[in-house]
Image (cartoon, rainbow, N blue to C red; front, side, top):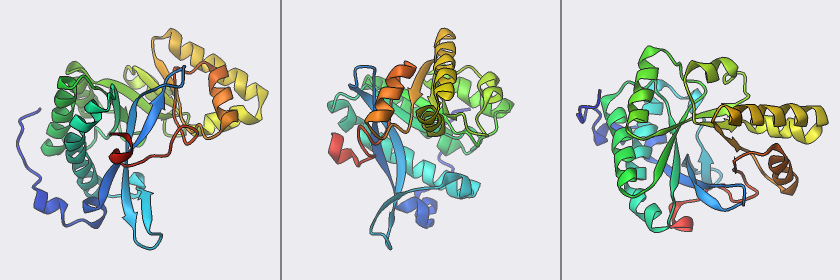
Length: 245
């Protein structure tokens, strides 16, 4: 599967506007003691009208556009790894679309994984909720897992990411969608249900990340849920590497 053949030249990447201005921003993930244990990498691009960097709506992109952006991002992450290691980051969480069959993309995934391992940085690959999980996609995931990757389920609790998806492959990390936290903040019933869900996932050996933690109330709810990790604006907004390294 990984032949290290460059079938997607840099010149092709430069032809797509959304890709050649895509840059990695990093948002910290904290543990139960609210100490930073690593970062999620998020793609951002410059919006000339708003004069700021904005998120990229990947589900709205074509496969080719998404592939361009992902290749640019992985190459940038490779460049950033040494600086992250000097900053004593021990974990990096990267989105994974296993449906992208390009050899260059798949080779870059492995290169990032192997280089990170040399630097003692653990890699979580977050399987995007809109990607299919058929035999081909599961095969790629298992190859990455065999080389030391930790596989995470992204946005659990959305319509696209439900229990059927969790049952499709073994996950080591479950990232709860922000909508679940917001429900738990409004309803004691939802809070009890979500607490039970977190406990259930942990009994099965999975770590749970509470996403979308934006204020003190959210922090307190995430603490009550017993999540292993938290992530959100309450701790830091996604920022360029220069803020963290």
